[in-house]
Structures are given as C-alpha cells and as structure tokens.
Image 1 (spheres, helix red, strand yellow):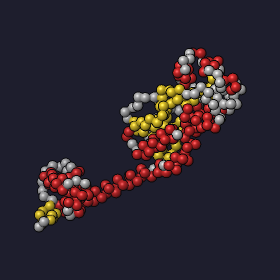
Image 2 (cartoon, helix red, strand yellow):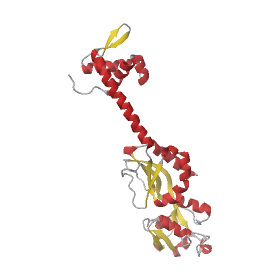
Image 3 (cartoon, helix red, strand yellow):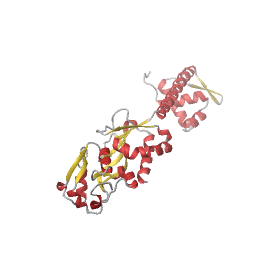
Image 4 (cartoon, helix red, strand yellow):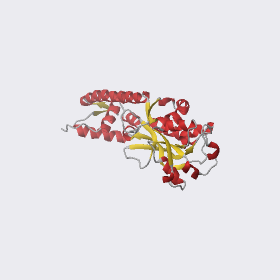
Length: 295
C-alpha cells in the first residue's frame, strides 16, 4: 500500500461529495463536471486500495472507510479554509509599508497623502523615508518608490511610473534672477551651481543634453540631500538641478522658476515590489501614482 498522500484534487472531490451527499452538488461547488468528480474519486480509491462509496439505489452510501476519511478530510479542509481566510484577512488588515527617499516624500508624496487616503482607504499606508541607499528587498517593506535606471532585476516586480526629467530651477528671490531667467542655458557655465553630493551626475547629464561641455560647469555649494538643495534654491541661494516631479508644486506656486525647461534623464520613477510578496495593493498604488503623475 502506498504511504504517499493522495492527490489534493482527489481528496477535495471526495470531501465535497461526502459532505454534500451528491457528486452533482460537489461538481457544482468545485466548478467542474460530474464526470471529473467521478474520475477523481475513482483515482482516490485506486490510490488507497479500497472503496469509499457503495451503491444504494440511485444514490451513494459511504463505506466504513469512507466515513472515517470523510470525518478526517472534512476537519482538515475546514481548518485549511479557516486558516487561509485568517491569513488573508491579516494581510488585508496590515499596513502597506512604502519606502521612498525623504526628498520625494516631503516634496511630492506628503502634499498628496490626504488624497491618497481618500482614494485608497484600504491601503492603510505606512511610509518609511530614507535619504541613504534604499534596499527594496529588505524585510518589512512591501514596496519601494524611487528613481532608478533599467534593466530591472528578475526578482522584483517593477511598475514604471514616469521618466525622470531634470532641469535647473531658481527662485525669483535670487540676486541674479533678472539676468538669468531669460538667458541661454550656456550662461549657467559661468554660474556657481548648487548641487547634491549623492547625485553628482545630474548637472553633467543636463549639460550634455543641452550640447554644453560638462567640464566647464562650476559647482558651488553642495548639499547632502536633494531636499536641502531645493530648500536652498527656494530661499534664493542659487541655481539648483532637480527632477521635474519634485518641483512641480513649487513651480505652480511661483516659489521656483525653470527658465530652461527639463530634459529626460536615464532614470525612471518606479514602484518596486519584491516578487516573493506580490500584493494586489501594490498594483492599486501603482495605478494611483500614474494618475497623479499624469495630472
């Protein structure tokens, strides 16, 4: 006699038939045909080496072995259904932990957080901010929103949201605003430029896109984080380089001006979700983010 467990589908077919007292009702519950249920039960009887049902008129009657297996299988499947339901409910009740850079959180996400909570109340979002190197694979994080460059790793589900566009911005409060805001991009080669230490490629990338010699750039005051860089620009301390998404609200409010527009960079703003823990809430969040970015 085989010591292996019978196939799960065969056990499910038997459990439903024994519980409902009908192959037809079992077939309807499991969304299969009457013939499929019959074949599964026959397969189970062959695997076990004994009969589970006996004919009684037009109906079926459980054998003694069938009665024993019915009681055990019903208990097991009931516990499985209950446990799966509890696990699913627990996941639905747990907050969705989103990691993102602090500058993106402060300048773009938080102003839209109230709208997100209204649109996706089931998300129960918990935000985890960092200006250091983010690790989208770390435990305790459901998704990571950040700028990164393709190709994407195979162990992550990456929802591309928008191409990164970067450009110089300055405040009307800046002392040289009147001279600069109608000047050509080449004028910035003579300007001490505000920059971030963790994105040294930003100004050279912008210069190359405008046909300028990046070696002629003059870097002025540096800042550790993009958030502080943009606050310095808004305070009138100089010309900064920034992703368009992160200064969109400042441009609309007139705190900053982008006289030279924006150029596309190689990075993408994307939502990264570990493939090991795909969550339908991540897809809902990605759709919502795309809608906000298009707006």
